[in-house]
Image: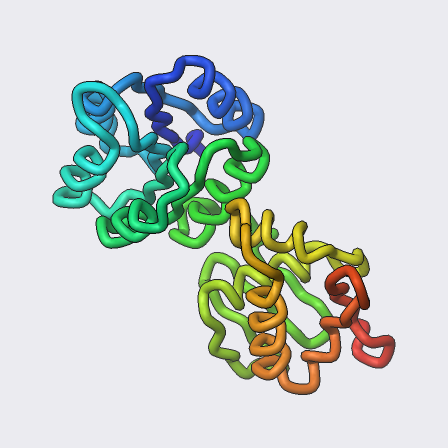
Length: 231
């Protein structure tokens, strides 16, 4: 299978190298551009690009304008990077069709994990590990489906990602901070009620299997299949 192409666009050479090194280690073919105009030239010359990582503040043409032009011609997944923490910027990105929005500074490992998750979600990878099982819960990352005893369970996007994260870390006590960093992917400056609210809704939708998500008092949560449900 040919390597998937990822275009990394940032006017900071050090940042491009940092991101590129982590992607190359995961066997992606990385293309680089130092400004918006160069990014568009590269994109139109390589129409098989699987995903763009696009900085907002750049010379010649900013990330918003690049995203706006690309969206007129393509639905290729786009991750926006920015040093800003302004909520209005994030809303602008999503209105333009951005798939993810990550504020600097960020963990390169988390960024790569987001790249992989988006590519699985858009069906660009053929990873058989996309199907995960825990007790009677089956989660298919490629189809973005969850089934319990063969019956499909309707989850929101974040509920799906939260369940996926729990299933990938079965038996591990996870702090709310770990969950926020891994599922929400931004520095969170409020309280942890957003986690508790999503866990409550997820438990409800999983029915009796909601008991798999156990509360670790004073810390967070742990996903553990009950002994009678283990296969």
